[in-house]
Amino acid sequence: MSIKSDKWIRRMARDHGMIEPFEPGQVKSRAGERLVSFGTSSYGYDIRCSNEFKIFTNINSAIVDPKNFDANSFVDFRGDVCIIPPNSFALARTVEYFRIPRNVLTICLGKCVTGDTRVLDADTGDYLPIANWTSARRTAALGPGGLRKARVSALAAHGTKPVWRLTTESGLALTATANHPLLTPKGWAALSDLAVGDRIAAAASAPFFGAEPLSAPGRLGRWVRDQMDGGGIDGIPRAVFRAPRADIAAFLEAVWGGRAAEGLCAARSVLDDIRHLATRLGYACRMVEEGRAARLLLRGEALEHRGNGTDGISARASTEWDRVSAIRAAGEAPVYDIEVPGPHNFLANGLIVHNSTYARCGIIVNVTPFEPEWEGHVTLEFSNTSPLPAKIYANEGVAQVIFFEADEPCETSYKDRGGKYQGQKGVTLPKT
Image (tube, rainbow, N blue to C red):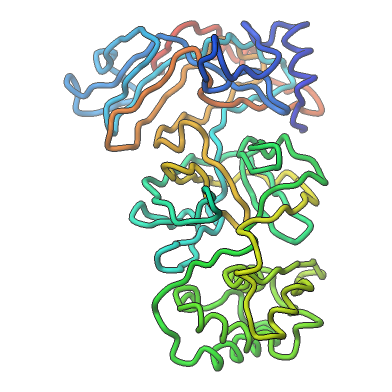
């Protein structure tokens, strides 16, 4: 099964009416007014919602029952802007009417990363999987003048989705949905729009430290080095990330010992931790795969700084350009996003990534598969996870759909089964 390109999407829309109405390019403005973009992207299509909405209210019902859904639980609204109450949701439909081919599966996606993606707590120095994040923290985000502390206002879980793993020439890696944006010299680009050799932004120095001293950072560093030699460790003790700058420097000095020239060989998970700590001090690193293990090497300028007893922060910018070395499908996984008001980006596994337009405001669009030979308007659900009212703009982009073509047609399609949502028009409520 392969993901389809913009050329395929345009051809199927033109010759087979797969999407009507269809926009062959990306529309980002109208009459000088900026829009949430919609239309064809490199490997997907950004859909719009119409101006028909059903806003949920619990006035008439205390229980939401998918097997016996009460239409009176909604208030009908028609207009260019829909206001969703705090911690509530609304239903809408796409402007586009879809006709899915028999050998194609289409999936509606938000933009997010897998739960094991590591994110920096810029206040304490902790380095956490995004799935373990809380809204009480600040993280590292790119703004004027470089990386800085930025408030995280919400964590959003988007369910299980198809994901792709991107790796760079310096050995950084990120697993995310195909439409998650990364920063390039020309601006933000979806992962699916990137190719081997393209440049993306990575952290060169991230001087964020904690305030919890280590009792003996050098001794701890030597212990970690010994454990690495014996293959008995898969990560750095969490206390190291929360330590002050001087303690982290002493810890890393003991870990490297006399091995700066040949580098450190260990499990990738350990070296990812060491590399992140080195980035805090501005040391440039490169990681190479060696069978089941990997080797972490200090680049030339980092060796020079280490040799003269200084770190590289004062001499380095916050970010540098790394090159994509590979992009491959990585199956399906639970995915997440965090809301970072203001800069609308954050540092994830050492790379600068963006939030989706609605997800970064705490508005979650449901994940919906369009099965082979299904046709109709797509019913969308917008969940407002924020404590404030939220706006949805009609006739503007709300989510992206991606098309997967199978090697052969399915034996039984949605049309063959006589699915109850076949040919649906307008906002359609649950059926049993």
